[in-house]
Image (cartoon, rainbow, N blue to C red; front, side, top):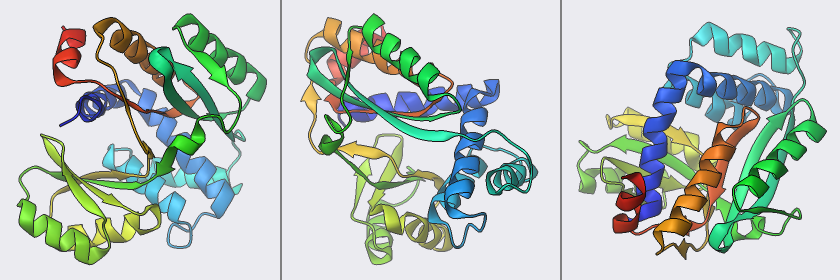
Length: 249
């Protein structure tokens, strides 16, 4: 298992803690609102909303709260209008970074994100400078209790591309357009699905074999991730397990 994957698992656990503090809760609600505003309030006709709706439910957000967010997005209820922006840049070691944001003030958010890059040894880049190094994929996370062969067979039959052993869970990879169908098929087959999402995945990774550089990269990623307007941060690093254990210590 790569260091990047292990770091993703650490982030998953951190997200659970954030949910209890309300930070992740607020970010997911904004995602639901924007998905409804851009594609309509019917999850069956709006795949992005369906994904965001399910993501909110996976994180135990009450159904009525999600439904109010959908209504704010469609204009049935009054709410703030958020704009989707993706910032691109570089972390120490030449690591490419994408930061997806939802903001009601582009100028404020842009200045703050630029400052976070600068203060943590990174730099902002022009639009398109690093985005080409990533592609969007669907990910369905399944409990490790599922049998690998049975899961592989069911996933491929449902349209998935692959399954990956993440140590504590299985990660089923799908084309983004097939994410919801694959999840539904796995749930119908009785597999214990924990969550699903459609992240940006790097086409290739940079190995960080130096503890100091790895620590700087993770500090920048964490600083960006903590910003209220940022929904997701993606980067193309890989940290060997021995280095990651040293950083965590």
